[in-house]
Amino acid sequence: MSSRGRRAGAGDTRADILEVAREEFATKGYAGTSLRGVARGAGVDPALLHHYFDGKAGLFAEVVGVPADLDERVAAAVVGPVEEAGERIVRAFLGIWDHPEGRTRFRALVGAATSQEQAAVVLRDFVSRTVLNRLTTAFGEDRGGVSEVAVALAGSQLVGMAMLRYVLEVPALAGADPEEIVALLAPTIQSLLVD
Amino acid sequence: MSSRGRRAGAGDTRADILEVAREEFATKGYAGTSLRGVARGAGVDPALLHHYFDGKAGLFAEVVGVPADLDERVAAAVVGPVEEAGERIVRAFLGIWDHPEGRTRFRALVGAATSQEQAAVVLRDFVSRTVLNRLTTAFGEDRGGVSEVAVALAGSQLVGMAMLRYVLEVPALAGADPEEIVALLAPTIQSLLVD
Image (cartoon, rainbow over all chains, first blue to last red):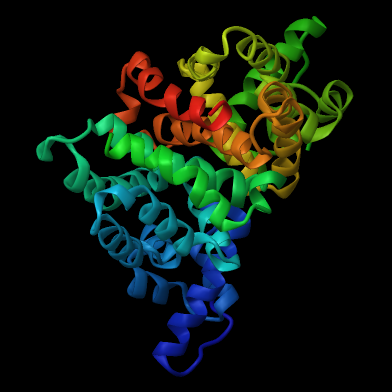
């Protein structure tokens, strides 16, 4: 009911909270994580979490920590020769998630989306407004390009690869060389977005 | 701590338990669902759940309820003209999940895999031993076909589509006509498995 203690230094406290929250979301899922539990783990008053992060959804968005980065990377990946768009996009995606911390974050994201309706909405809005919007602007019907369904299916191929590689850890994909994934997946993304 | 009551008829009781469990897994995820809670919801003694389902993992497998069906459908889908394999496989996949109950089951599956290490292992083993094994036998290296990574990526494209259509419910995919999905996705599955 009460905090176990306080620490000096707002910057450190914030980082401590995020570290605890990242661990809690990853192991307990969105629904199983409580602000109270995170506050206890970080040794701070729960009110501080509301102050810093505007509640659990805000803390989650901050913990996941990919928004700006992901959006920038996708924005960068759509620029360049159109013949290599698929390859750039697969590389960008692997660059974001293909390391231990990224894997943990991806699991937390998916876990949240499946266990908590609010998180699914947050994530859908985020994916739609950033990734799919960037791809639609670059390859969509307004540019005489492909349908929204094709753009969404291109995005879904990256999500599916990540599901088998990071979440289910199906051996063939979990252990695959990133370059092999790029070589096989780039053409299918390319054909959906460009052809 | 104790059950709230019993019902007569083992068949009905079993069905009641499964109905409650399906709802609990779908809304609370694997980790958030307890045998005690399911027993309470079904109005039976928790011991009965252990007796019928051999614990939570067994109850989950029973609730998910796709194994035999999924395996049969995949087995049927790989048979036939090789030029239409991608199309048959996408159609089979949509036939399994593309209805309200299927969607709920898919969410429960993914939620379990992300929130509980044991469920991820169960699901990985199941996917590897049924779907990926069928595809590898039909299209893999032993038949002079494609690599295990290519087979796994083909499977992952179906999983990714389902993630955006059933879990995140990204509008473009959630509302797409199944035939449009078949038309766009079949060629990429085909190219991974056959070309």
